[in-house]
Amino acid sequence: MNTESTPVRGQIVNHAAYSADGLQVMAGAGKLLTFRMHYKGTVNPVYLQFHNVASTPADGEAPYLPPIPVIIGATGGAYYESDTPLDFPVGCYACLSSTAATKTIIVAADGWMTATKL
Image (cartoon, rainbow, N blue to C red; front, side):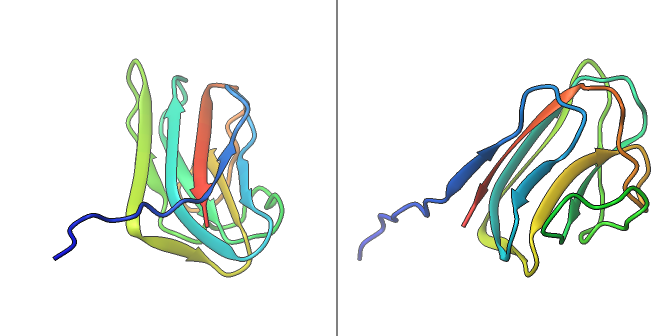
C-alpha cells in the first residue's frame, strides 16, 4: 500500500503588506485551496469575508460564505486549508470588514493576506 501522497500545487496570490483593501484571489471561476491572513489593527469587531465575484465588490454587498470573526489582541489572524478546496463559481475576493452581514472595508492598513488557488 502506498501511503505517500503528492501535494496539490496551486498558484499563490499575495496581498501587499498592510494594505487597506481586500485581495482579488481569482478574477474567474476557481477553487480556494489555502488562505492565511494577519491583522494587527485595533478596529473591533473585524470579520474576514469571502465574496463570489470577479472584481472588487461594492461596500454593502453580502459575503458568499459566512463571515469569520477575527480575534483582536496584539495580533489576530485566520488560516484555512483543506483537502476539499472551496468552490467559487464566479471569482473570489477576500477582505476584512467591520460588519459581519455586509462588506464594510476597514480604512486602516493593518493586515496582509495570502492565498493558494487551483
